[in-house]
Length: 228
Image 1 (tube, rainbow, N blue to C red):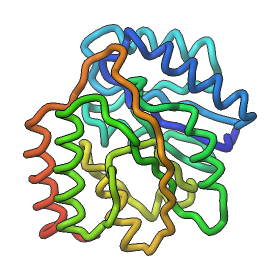
Image 2 (image 1 turned 45 degrees about the vertical axis):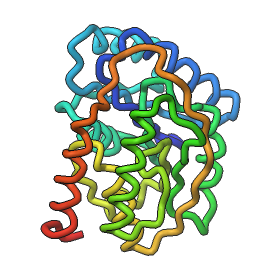
Image 3 (image 1 turned 60 degrees about the vertical axis):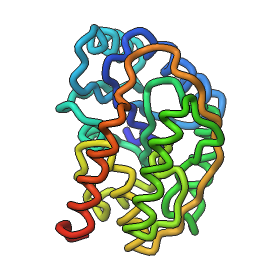
Image 4 (image 1 turned 90 degrees about the horizontal axis):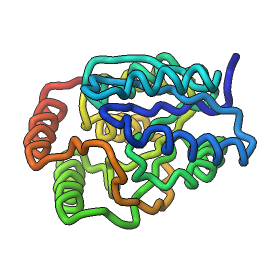
């Protein structure tokens, strides 16, 4: 069966909140009459997240559970390859994204003149996250001339036929930057949609100051060593 939208949610240590997050997404997509598939990409949880996801998949045939090695990028890429949708997307599973934006993102992606749709957050939940995001954007725009704000924000949606062209490979949070670098090289038409950002209601955050150094390492690799 082919779905209209296959959405990947990387999940790591979200046992406390994943049911609530998914239920909200399902409710929104069902109300909008979008034929959806949810790919739950568990990647290295140390709590009972996997057990919770197994129960969810049994209750809803539209939920597909897969596992991948740890890493946000690895989980997204593995999920996208396992998806069965005319349009593919991904977003965090921590409940901070305003899922109501999904209908707008999907409708924008279906327009013939659009190649890629991403959101940008109109607020951030902490000074640390705001600072790290600012550093990410400044560095990425400086070295790759992306001219894009809030690079790591998602949901992100594009036509399934474009996945092979992208050949995504970043195993970590640099995935969004890689996607935008390649989209710019391909001269893709990118649409950005504003989205509210909520405070984390549970689970464990993977964002730490050290991630900035990881990002700098990736910039060096992609700027001078990778062939895009």
